[in-house]
Image 1 (cartoon, rainbow, N blue to C red):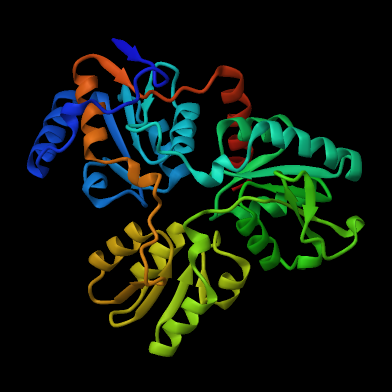
Image 2 (image 1 turned 120 degrees about the horizontal axis):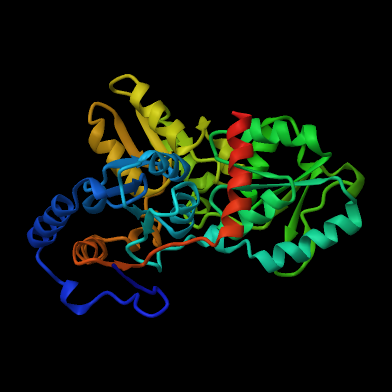
Length: 367
């Protein structure tokens, strides 16, 4: 089998462009059939409909990585998501299994806001100013390099579902938590636990300084990395107010990656799986405005026509990098496998994988 380096050949071949929809579908189905049990396709909830329908499993990022770990027969795992998700799958699966991201440009702007070199510099400042009182916790929406740093320094990962439980555990270990890369999930979770904003500070990794300092440094408990999700920060309080003015019966539910004021103004907030569960359990005729990625919102509306479901924003809020995974790239990845070639393999080096898995395993032990 030939491995084509993603640094040499990541450009979609011209003959995969501009095929008819029916031909894409037919050839993807044919390649899946040829590969059989050697192949498993993972599809993230935010993935576009014309791709996710080919997925063998759907879910959020960590859920899919753990499912991938269970696929003992599969030789190749094609991850329709973004880069850090494919890294997690590679970390958790066997060394002889390969993980493929159909388009290596499918990154995550939030994950990219936490750079290892910047984290190492910030850690030196924190150790100097605050001593050995800080435990790092990273959202799973982070690179393997960041997970590895956290694992090496006694910390753990978290998801938007288990963030509260993880922070409770972390506070038993150290006085302070460094939460990265998403400041909003960290702030919203800590505030819901009863930690006031005055006991939080934001580290601006670009400027190399503290921001949003409301209380004395000795009282700080949560140190927030200045990162965010480009999708969830597009939702606003004005949008919530407009929805309620149009129809007071509409409930607003948002993801905790939204800004603090949006989460406070909403009726409910929770992870992707929480949002899905709320809609699944809601009575017919109920009305919802959902603040999360548009592909998921549209899918929920289609799956639950007995409810009135709308996107909180009146403009599209897609995850642009997630949407880079399309049928042309999926077909290329699959037909390359059929031909005995591997394009766009995601592979995490042994040391980084070890410490990343350490961080992940600590989280799993907390649950």
